[in-house]
Amino acid sequence: MVNIELKQVGKSYGNKEVLQNIDLSIEQGSFTAIVGRSGCGKSTLLRIIAKLEPITKGELQFTGKEANDPKIRIMFQDDRLLPWKTIIKNIELGAVHPSVAKESLEKVGLIEKQQDWPDQLSGGQKQRIALARALASNPDILLFDEPLGALDALTRIEMQNLIEELWQQQHFTSLLVTHDVTEAVRLADRVIVIDRGIIQLDERIDLPRPRERNDRFTYYERKILNQILGV
Amino acid sequence: MKLLKQWYSNQLVPWLLPILAIVLWQLLGQSGLISSSILPTPLKVVDAAIKLTSSGKLQEHVWISTQRAFIGFLIGGIIGFVLGLLNGTVKFFERTTDTTMQMIRTIPHLALIPLVILWFGIGESAKIFLVALGVMFPVYINTFSGIQNVDRKLIEMGTVYGLSKWSLFVNIILPGALSSILVGSRYALGVMWMSLIVAETIGADSGIGFMATSAREFMQMDIVVLTIVLYAILGKLSDVVAKLFERRFLKWNPVFRKN
Image 1 (cartoon, rainbow over the protein chains, first blue to last red):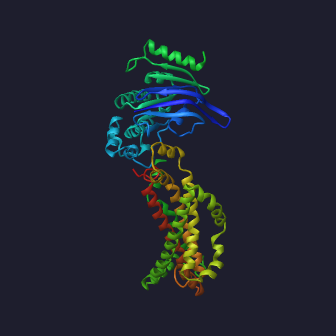
Image 2 (cartoon, one colour):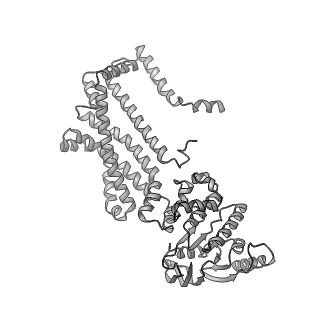
């Protein structure tokens, strides 16, 4: 279990400042969503936490029990499965043990596909395999970089349910980057709006799970959307 | 349309054109339209093949040539592959050796024949050297560019999953570059036979090339043509082997997957 702490984090590419003075602490086992327009810096923030990008200023810290070497995994927008490995071998790549790979494949409901090649699966199925691969490594932190963006509406709802269910089972710290406000309110305990590299809104979503689209859901949705649109 | 598709799906169809050409050639030769001193008929070539086979000479020469070809291929292929790997994965090697490789590559390796004869004489090493040199570059370039063109996103995924450098190489970089490496090897097989033919024609006392030059001196047209046919068969055979390798190693790719 790991907390994520960002202190005055800034990131620039050349003269372009993508993120400025981000102060953010994310507690272990929570589900946080970061929303914003494209190019607002939300994906960069995710990549910084995954240590794929160095920060230009400020500090990134992990605290808690596994803070020394936290296991961070990303689910990308594209599945990034290795086309030359069968489904089960792809999952084993992340697995702490081969038996976990099978278990994880069962959890996403695709055990019958274990000997198939990735290109024989649909887009939604491939993302489920990517999720299974991430889970098989028993992550402390799971970062979602718009993983459902390319899926059709129905598959998307199924995936949201699956992610919620698995998160409730394994309680890894989740951070979801998305431009879909409904998705953010549907899944997260806390929604952060970023615009022009600055945190504009930090909202707790106080709704029971599984979430229904009632008045309070719509209230949060509208509040966040208005903030993004600047209304 | 459907009928046509059924027809050309037949396994024998690719062989139709060569067979037709041979029949036409035989007819033209028999009728005297083509003089046998210019081009002997296919039957005469077959005849020569049978005679040389029963005396054991044909097998001997083919075997010697095949050995030379594959030893040269192995040496050149391994050097090209290793250099391609090093230059594709380690920046230091790329900076220090790639430019040199590209410069040497542009020299037609057969232009080195006079030099090679002076260095090695006309013994085995001269021929193997030429084959190895010819094979090395296509393997090098395709290995190098195959590695450079491995999807960066997959490598990033591997990094996120905490793979070690070796594991990253074995699981992602090498399989990602493999199809390009196999294309290079297939091309190199063609270069291999070409280099060998030239090397054997210029100076040898055995092998298919030697068979051709000595037959020429005695005006044995049937044997000259036979050697050309032999090269075509050997070339096709090595291509078949290369294709089998592709099927085996790239079976994940729908192009090579048989249902």
